[in-house]
Image (cartoon, rainbow, N blue to C red; front, side, top):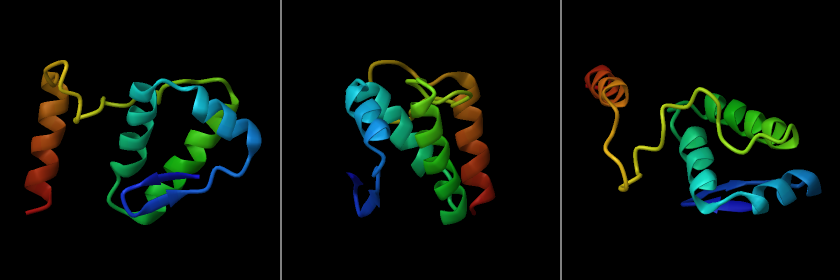
Length: 92
């Protein structure tokens, strides 16, 4: 089980858990951000299912993910900045 803030993900499949534990901290963080990014719980649930299936397929990073906005070692790309600004305008 992985705890993210108040959220718990139940990684009960031993193969999924082993794949999760084999990820680097940065790769885990990208998956966490990918799962927590959607606002709707239903979409987050879909992302958790995707995480589990892709880990079983041997994938180590989320595909088609804009990138973790929490990374401090590099500047956000223009496309990520645009998505974030579009998102903040839509939520107002």
